[in-house]
Length: 226
Ligand code: DX5
Ligand code: ZN
Image 1 (cartoon, rainbow, N blue to C red):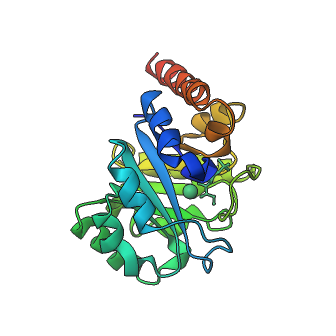
Image 2 (cartoon, rainbow, N blue to C red):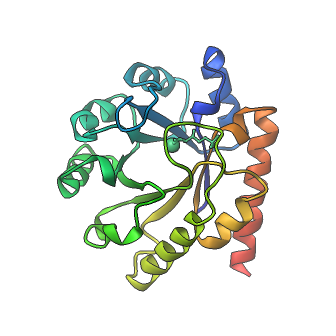
């Protein structure tokens, strides 16, 4: 199943609830929430109170992307704030196996994010324990950057790996960074199925942008069925 996951980092923070509700009303069933600590990435974004308050306003799947050093410190709190899926960076947590276990113990889906320079092979030992792999298509930390082309090869490599290990139906491939309606067909072709977009959804007409993304996803789904 394909999903669009609007990243609220691109939203108007003065009208956050309104912006989120517009994406939901336009058919986005996921919402991407970027937590940044100013250490793993240079910037600081938002944390628990924002997630908790938005939770009351939306029924979307809350897809929390932790750009945080040692994210294991916050898993329980983030889960209690209403996350449905918690994604940690492989580069940020030393005991990845235990971190995945902790996320699942909270009853949440577990994702692992990889920076552009991290090869997908680092996941070989834990691939059957994850619900989602997030391939960063930009260096994490800021919205509005340009997609790095070689990251598409990583999506392809991961899709192949999942298929050869019989995990294709179980593990989602998410992409994040620089996604636009123009490059989306290439990303889908490479094998991603959860699509994050910040600027391309929230800058301009949110309803129209969300619907345009969904149209491309649905067209790709139909093509795959034929
Ligand atoms: C970047 C964040 C992204 C960001 C994407 O580090 O993880 O989720 O909001 O923004 P765009 O789609 O504008 O690149
Ligand atoms: Zn993100």
